[in-house]
Image 1 (tube, helix red, strand yellow):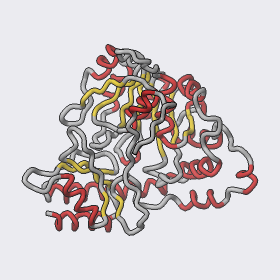
Image 2: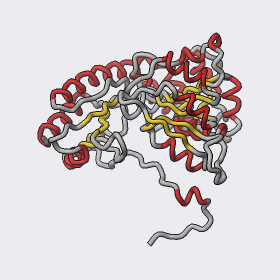
Image 3: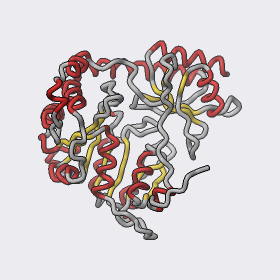
Image 4: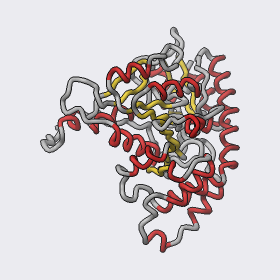
Length: 366
């Protein structure tokens, strides 16, 4: 019997919380469901963690992660004032919703709300629901591209913030910089481009922060969870104009990133060439895995990420059936029970042995 919680706000009572991918305790399970990098982090990162002193643990960490921000600024060719450190990329999303969106307060319109493409990262809707801000959802085109009138429709609705993941999740398709620039110039709110998977893409959208472009409403999300093999560390950061970052600092928790995470994150960026080797390995496996899936009749869009979205053909076992069959064989992939995705499986690109095990299991299921 569910307990009644009379103290919760009405929007929290209605809230359907975010559902993360399964995290099994069995180390023998092959996890291809949460887009983790199959390779370990750089050795220098582990050395940096081991070097954290008892005295630094006794003290509060630098509230703004200044040392990390200096490293990130140098890596990306911006100033430290254009960098904000966060507890995973998800915290940056929460901060943006808090800073830029208005609660609905029961209003029947979308003014002050959030704009998203659909389908997309399901946490976006959850964060909006927690904040009680309205959401405008705009369906992507059949090829997963962003509609040409995306910004115009958000402006018409009065949205204050737009969240676009690029490369897109769950398709892996990347949007050209020129298209995103047009959206940023037309949109009257803040455009947050979630680059969680950018390390596996051919290019990023960092040029949008070039001062010559004068795009003060663009905010880029970066995370160390995917490319740097540090999902367990929970460290992300935002890049944007100095005034935009200053606004986000107003809603940042007092000590939102701990000293271990700050130290490890700085080391990861300093030694990113080692991480880049894993990106190249994942990209190579992505191409091989896509080709093998196509041979088995599972079509995938051209992914620029570390995962593939495979469509299960008609007349064969359905996506949920294959998901369950793989799970029974100790292999986890991701199935989304929602429009446009019910015949598809999102498959993280694993190591060569992991991918070989997946392909063998698919052959057995068929």
